[in-house]
Amino acid sequence: MRYFAELAYKGTAYFGWQRQPNGLSVQEVIENALGTILRSPIEITGCGRTDTGVHASQYFIHFDCEVDLPEGLLTRLNKFLPKDIAIYRIFEVAPDANARYDAYFRRYAYYVGNRKTPFYNDTSYHLPFFEALNLDYLQMTAALLLEYEDFFPFCKTHTDVKSMKCQLYTCFWQWNPDSNQLVFHVAANRFLRGMVRLMVGACLNVALGKQSIEEVKQALDNQERLSKSWSVPAEGLFLEEIRYQYVERMD
Image 1 (cartoon, rainbow, N blue to C red):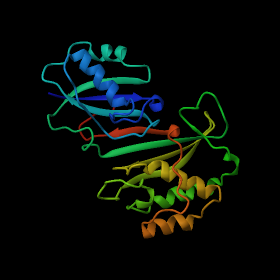
Image 2: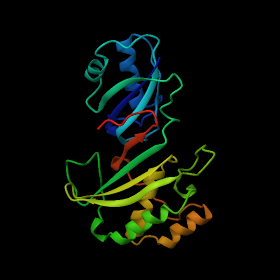
Image 3: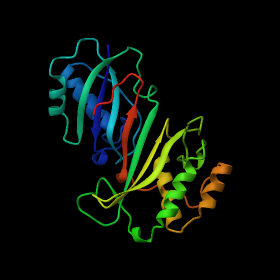
Image 4: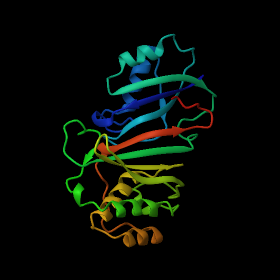
């Protein structure tokens, strides 16, 4: 039987989502916990790969199990897992359901703080030159990105993806007065490796006067690297929403 699990994690302590030999990953921690409780090796598939230090306020995995899940698994699993990983629900799905390939909508948010604060060190990027930002240019650059489907300028080098096409649904900046933060919101059917952090960097560079909107437009028109490409720090990035045709949203 195949199961989905909805979860969230704070990525500060982990070397990204994917299991790897040289550092602790979120995947490894969950697989070890499930395997211990179910007394059998469990391999999980995640809805995407997040880099070192990136967070997820909504994330889905799938895994297979040959027996019925024991009663109280959710409670036991959350007790076993560290405080920075939480499982919200586990439910059975069709045998061919896939957490990675069946997702048709993904939404990220990037948080930029206007002042240094000890309470957001791991979950927001403090921009030292925040007051110098041209907020109109910030929004104009985000709006420009919505006009394109190919995003080679916003993909990390040495990637093995075959297509740079992504369908963007939303892309804008919003001020959050409660936390004194600017938030970059972007949703698409898929994202390239490092894409969101490079998009944020381009918006900030334009808003700080370090490059022009015309330079960003030219890079997108010609599908070439930006001369001042900036991948902003990982701590401000959250994967916030994933959608499937067959999974009801949990409010």
